[in-house]
Every structure is written in C-alpha cells, then in structure tokens.
Length: 474
Image (cartoon, rainbow, N blue to C red; front, side):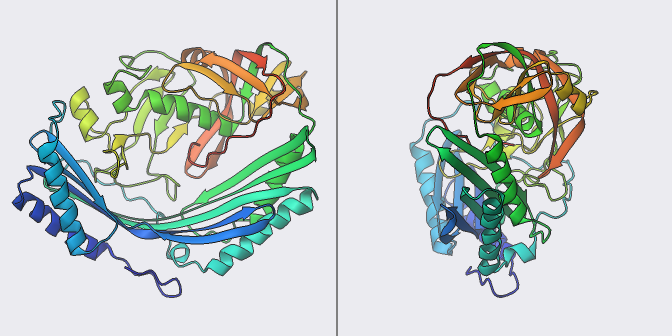
C-alpha cells in the first residue's frame, strides 16, 4: 500500500487480515502442523540534526511478512518485505521447507492459543493527524529545537532527531488467534554539547515520546532544556573514591530498575537459568516500599498495547509488591516450559529471532519520603541522572556515571566526569534507603526519586567519555 501523506489516512487492516487467512490455509495444505503469520504495513519518517542544521530527511517502509511454521517440534522461520500474495506464499513454503530440515525443540509445546482473558481497549494509540503529518511541519519544529538550544547558550552544538511512524499489523495462527494492531508513535530528542575547551565540554539530553501529534509539544523548550543540562555539566571533576550514598532522579530510577528488574523477570532468562531472579518468586529482594508492575494499558502510553506480538491480550502484571518478587513475564513458549500463565508479554522478534517475553511498560510506585527532604539530607554523596545496569546478565554492576553531581551538605558542588559506580543487583535493591512520594509521570510510565544507602564510587582517570543515549529504556 502506498502512503499518500497529503490525503486522509487509509487503513490496510482488512487487506492484511484477508492475506493472513489465505496464508494460514496454504501453510496447512503444505504440511505445517502449526503455523503463525504476522503481516506488517506502515512507514517511518525521520528528520536528523547534526551540527546545528538538518542533515537529512528520510522515509522508509515498514512492510514485513514473518512466518513461523512447525512440523511437529521442528521450527522453520521465513520473512519477506513485500505484501503480494506470491511473496507471502513463498515465505510460507520456505518456512515449511526449513522446518523439515531443523532439529526438534523438545521444549516446544504449541503456538499461542486463544485465552479467555478480555482484550482491554486502550485509548489514543493511533492518531490520524500524526499518520498524515506533513514533513514541512516537522522541519519547522526541528528548527525551533535548534533555536531553543542556541538562544540558551551561544556555543551550543545541537544534534537531534525527530522520528514518527505508523504501524498496522495482523497476527494469525492455525489455533485461531486473530489479532490486529494499529498504532502511531513519535520520538524526538535534543543532544546538546557546549565545548568551552578541549577538556571542558558540557553535554545535555532531553527527549519526548508520544502516540499523537501534540500541538502543545514545545520543540523550542526541548532544545532549551538540552542546553541547560549541558551548561550544568561544565566544569566537571572526578568524584572522590569512597563509599557514599547516592540519589537517582526519576528517569535514572526508571532506567535502572527497568534494566535490572526487566532482565531478571524475563521468562526466557528465567527458563534458561541466566536470570539472577530464577527461583526467587516470593523472596523479599528490596526495600518494603518498592512496588513495581507492568501496565501496558495506559492511555496513549508510548509502549502501551492491547495485544502482544503473538496476538495474546496483554495484562497488568504485579512484578514486585512491598519488596517481594511476585511474578515473571512470559509468552506462550516460556509459560509452557515454566508451567506458568501466559502473561501476554511476547515482544517482536520475528525476522531473526522468535518472540521473547519482555516488560512492556514498567511502573514504579511512590514511596513515603519527601523528594525535597531526600536531597536536603544528603550530607555527602552523588546525585545521578543516568541509568545504571548490569552487563550480560551478570548481577554485578560496574557503570560509568554519565550524568551526575557531587553533593556536600545538601548542595551540589560540581558535575562529574570519569567516575565509576560499583555494586550488584541485590545490594542495590536491598540498599534502597528512600523512595519519594512524588512521582514523575511521562510517556505512559511513572517513577519516583530513589536513594541508595552506600555505593562504591571510584574516579576512572582522565579519560574522555560521552553520555549513553537511550530513548527506549526508560
């Protein structure tokens, strides 16, 4: 389907469902014992900024055919990038041929089957205004982003990106699963550097995500905030090497717990034994004020969804209550192996990998502490505004502080550079000494400020380093 950006948005869902149904029938006729078809149509448009000017405008198709075919316990997967009937039929036949050649997977029980669970209707996941947004409007707003940074500091060097997408997807399988998804999304960020000298460069980052074209989204302000954050990082020094308390701001809390808890409760990492949370359901792992859940049903949430990648209705999952681990997140495969309910957390991965479970949209509950008081009570320690995570599934955490500040007597003394933080997952969770009652709500997620009692801090020498930017990890 050709997208016409100057006309009303035309849905292709009816066509996709018809093509998928025919493909399922062909697969069964060709000898597949079970088969799943995922058809995706849409496009992605982006405007990129480098060195204070627009460096490129791109549009690319998101058209994709993905097939998973089983012959008994033998899996074959194939994909294509054309939605013609012939292309889809070829992908089905190729998947079946590959299944014939594949070894058996003794863990496989069956593809996803329909569940009694009701589909929760989630509002504001698709916006026709965003789907048909004129590229000139994007360019005008990106110019405002650059201006916002440069008016804040005349040495601002601005990079950034605006990315918008439309997606229509249908999922069908031979067990009767029939799901369809229609969504839009935008992501935009400003990355600002202020190079006062070769050894004194401040960097700042600000972002926004949405499912709709929000006329209230202020691109000038995005650039301004990025530059203000860059200014705050000028004059950075190495932190003293010692054990100190640490306060994570809201986004740092969301990124940190999203990374370490998300990996730990992933049904696949639990199933394969690489999760540090394996066999820990019911264990008290953290401060009793810590409550974490997955809620993919937030209206307009950037990661909200009604169905997972296998067409199973999503659900709210209680992950941690009062510091106690309550649940893992699963898809059809891991649920059957672990003997658990399918929570509807299958994530996309059809081309090179089969779907794997993931937390859709982590929420972190409010605590009992005053955010203002937490900062005032920090006699000596660090305030960190960037996430921490383990490496390769290890519970050990050795992370560079990409954005942080050294504090004494409740006052910021200087920003940090070349500073490392060391702990591990269990020490971090048990060492939570405070959780703010105030929470930040953005992009469909919520997170508080969180303090850690004592963490090992070490200066990392005079090495050049830059911030890590992630728009999907918070």
